[in-house]
Length: 278
Ligand code: CDP
Image (cartoon, rainbow, N blue to C red; front, top):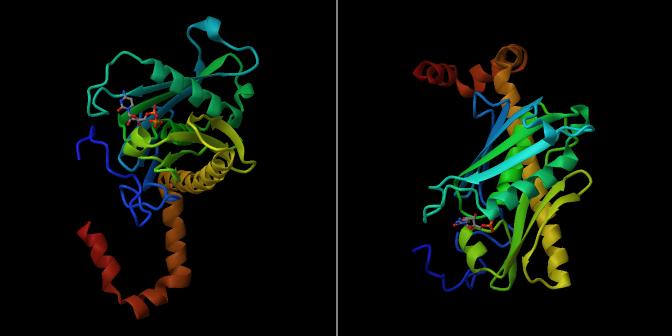
């Protein structure tokens, strides 16, 4: 199907979406921290076909100095889409949409950060959309928050984000590009999971009051799931960075608990062979 062709339906008679998802199902999400060596913190997100990199630098000295804030660090977010990130070549110059998303990202992330610990400094967050397939503003916030944690910026919470929309008159979680283009609206949200405080709430299209309230609940549930993925990604990154510690732990574990089990239950060769193959 060409990207320009409007699909006959967004929800099929079985109640499933174009990519086979149920209405309340997220796309497959893969998060990773520490993907860029030069940045103080970084993260990548793959959400369906959407693919985004986030890099964080700082806290560091702010240029130009007249932007400095006396009581806190300046959180400077820059969202950009690569020219090749969409089928029609995107113009390289920053668009109004990119400036708007940069601003709402900053607003969504700031309540989660202790920026008051670094007056006059700047924390730079750069987002590069490598491949856009819907939901890039929310995926950018999810990834940026992870990159800020990876950079060690003091924070109250990670900030997960997701959009809820309406397709063929039904509420759907985490819109793909066609649902975004041909659906009847979307509501991107970001939250502080512990308090369920909304730090991003936008709306495009029209929703009844009931639909709106249900959409928020659906979004909060989606965000809480994404929050678990964010925490997992951080734990994996820390485990990788402390290889000696985890190796020692593994050795201890094998020695005390599992050695006998390996010999009796699994046989002795499987694990040894695997290591040799590598
Ligand atoms: O990306 P998100 O849904 O958060 O924001 P949007 O402004 O609602 O954009 C929806 C989608 O339109 C993007 O994810 C892209 O897939 C697509 N888009 C595009 O094809 N060309 C652009 N210049 C901008 C967006």
